[in-house]
Length: 96
Length: 316
Figure (cartoon, rainbow over the protein chains, first blue to last red):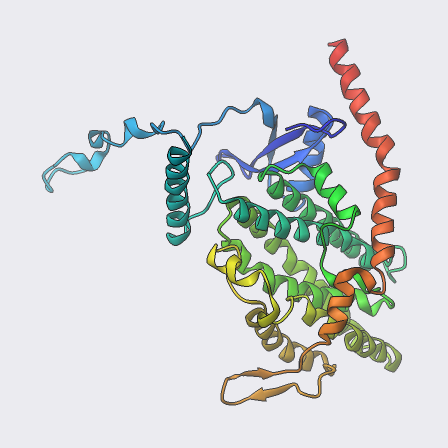
């Protein structure tokens, strides 16, 4: 939600080191993308917590709703055959 | 219609209560009782304001710290306090309040900050004592909050706790250095501890018997320990540190209790506490006036940055 005269809200994602995903760390206000990055550096990486930062306007994020009556995640609930433990493999079969 | 709505609310409430009972976290888009939301906004905002106002007492010593090393440390520490305030404001905003609103409530005196920051930092030794005692007390308060039931608050606390240890250690090291110095320096440390000990104990809030919010906050998993429990824990941790430092804590009732395995200690002047909370502390007016002027003097920067962003957008 943007209040008139208030800098818009950005969500901040930090990659803590090479080989790892960017992870959401919090949010901040900034007047534009460039300054959002600079503020994110000062607020969220004062002690080498990151090697890369993403910022995105909060209003640009579309999120699933946890309150939905028919939950978005239900389709994955009844498909046990998607998991490796669903399959019986004899104990003497190697490397599987 | 209202019966259906009531039943729906009851269902949502059950899910909420179950989440709390399972020691799981509540996240921003979950349904939550209005009182839970209000309590969190009050507590997180109070916490955020404390970090921001807390920059003032120590900030005055940045230019006067005795060496470049001490200046750099103090500057980094005060910058951290700003960062902590921002983590917390960001957590608070997930509850649907805006930053402007929170700043406005602070400046209007409608939201509080920790009473400790209404005391002045009169000597350079106070920089050490604030780090050791005030940040030490803050750590006692904050470590259990890493497990608080509201996700964004807990995550902000984890970041803060990681950084807070530097604050306490730099303070203790500063005092150790002064204690190894001249007679005059040792006296400065003792005077500072005498002055700040009781206000530090007040940081945990009123005794459990007078704490209006504790019981409900504990039931909701917002708070994990009572004020008195945390105060006791702090005293037990601090006494051996004071002994090692060579200072006397100004409490004639302070004594090791063989039976409980903890220290017995006296109570702060709670009337003073309530006076300070209600606005009559030594620096209340100065702190808010300074925050107001920083806000006013920064207005042109905020507006100019917005105008620049708008002109960049219209060019592209």
